[in-house]
Image (cartoon, rainbow, N blue to C red; front, side, top):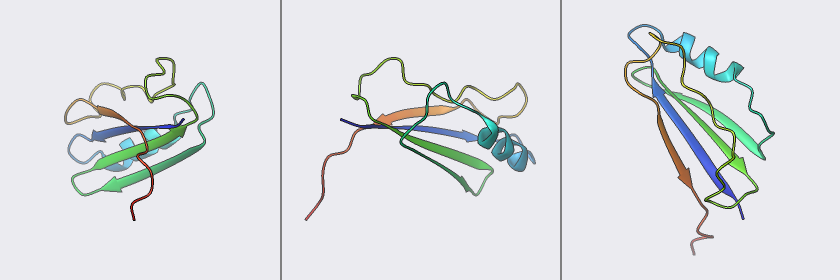
Amino acid sequence: MSVALMWEARAAEGRGAELLTWARAQRLAGEPLRRETFRAPQDRVLVITWWAAPYDEPDLPELPDPPDGLLARPVHRWRFEPVGQED
């Protein structure tokens, strides 16, 4: 089984580069199978980590909330599980 954790945040005005640097510097308590970091317009940062664990595993390490003042809104977090190949 595997699960992907998505962490998405929007930086406060003009602080997108700082949020990206902060997110990339965060270390997790465990080592994911894979980790990717993305950026998008409006100073958004997305981090996806893949884990060899069931969807409902409660102890998977996730990125924390950034320091006060760095965000335009609260962090969004989601879990996804693979559904197989599409033909």
